[in-house]
Structures are given as C-alpha cells and as structure tokens.
Amino acid sequence: MTDYSRRQFLGALGAGTVASAGFTQPVAAQETPVVKMGNNYFDPIGLHVEPGTTVRFEIAAGAHSATAYENRIPSDTSEFDSAVISSGGFEHTFEEPGTYDYYCIPHKSVGMVGRIVVGSPGGPAESSPIPDGDVPESDAIVEQGAIAYGSSTGGDGNSDGGMMGPGMGSGPGMMNGRNGGWGGGLPIVGGAVGMLGLVGGLLYWALGRNDAPPETGDSAMETLQRRYARGEIDEAEFQRRRERLETGGDDASQ
Image (cartoon, rainbow, N blue to C red; front, side, top):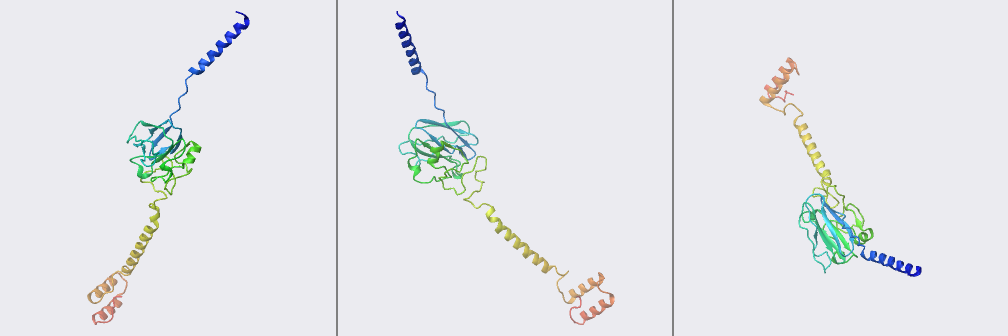
C-alpha cells in the first residue's frame, strides 16, 4: 500500500469513527421542572414549558393538591389531579399547547392557584380571569419562563390585594385588599366605647355630686345629724336648722 493510499484509508477510518461516535452519543434528558406546594401557594406560580414536558408538583409544607380547572385547560387535553397529598409529589406530562390553570382542593377558597403555559398561550383560560386568587398573565410567563410566587408581574386574577409571598400568612386568617379586616372597624368600635364612657361619666357625676340626694322630713333630719357629727356645722347652727325642720320650714339640712 502506497503512502497516499494508506493516508486515505486512515482518514476514512477516522471520519467513520467520529461519525459513529456522533450517532451513538446519548441526548441529555430534559430537566423536570418542579412546582413547590407550600402554605397556600404554588411556587413558581407561573411556569412556561414546551409540549411533552413533565412537571413535578412537590410538597414543601402542609397537605395540598394540584388539580386542573376542568374548564380552564385546552379542550383537546385531559384534566390532571394529584388528589390531596401531604408528602412526596405528583407528576404530569403536558402534551398539548395552551394555558393550564389549576388549584389546590383544600385551599382554593384562599387563592391557592397556579398557571402553566405549554408552548404558547391559548384555550378557555385566556377568555376570562381565574375565579380564585391571582395568577400572572400568560405573556409574562412565556417571556420570563417562570414567575416566582410573590411577584406582582402581570396579575390576571380578581384579587385587588395582589399576590403575597410564601410564609406571609396567606391562609384564611390573613386580611388583604378584598376584606376590610379588623382594622376597618376599629374607628367605629372606638367611637362607641368612647361614647359609652362619656355617658357613664356623666351619670356618675350626676349621681355622685352629693353624699345623698336632696331629702325632706326624717331623711333631712338624718342628713343634718350626719353633718353635725362630722363637724361641718357647730351646735348652734345644728339647733337652728333642726328647729326649722321641725316647724316645716325649708330644707335646713343643707
């Protein structure tokens, strides 16, 4: 074999080896996005994935579910529902493009909701606001990829108070812009208490101006005797007033 033929052979062999290696190299698996389920929140609350992506809903605290609204997912796909779980997680593969809104069964009433956009926004969820809580707008989700819970980016729900961060007490005891809370009633309660105090003070003052209310007859005589015993009047004055009482004169006990 000539040097030229040998070089051709080695070159072809090397090229075949490289090509073979290229065909047999495994494709790295796509990382599974994780949505945390904590104390009345999903995090991220907005997530964008491509069709065919498996999303894992994972318990961070408490007991929750990831349950799709049956009328807020693409019409040509099936609902998903993890049921209520208190540990571990739940996985679902999103095949069809569109917008998927979902909620937590036990905490739906306090606004524990989330949104996943698969590919591009679309479907029934885009035609009306989410009925519970608040989620980011789909365009913002697509643009950012994932929107953490607590972000105020592009709210699309009916909550006037916006979204609250994890650990901020977003359960039933928490007051927000939709509820007046105790704070709104304090001026009324304080005013009522103040009025009661004023009325009570006036009554106390009116009833307590004297040791006893004005009296006549025997009661007036008793009052005169008490004043004499306390030394408020001398004996001569006491005798003079007693005589006036006995003869039916004005109240001399004062």
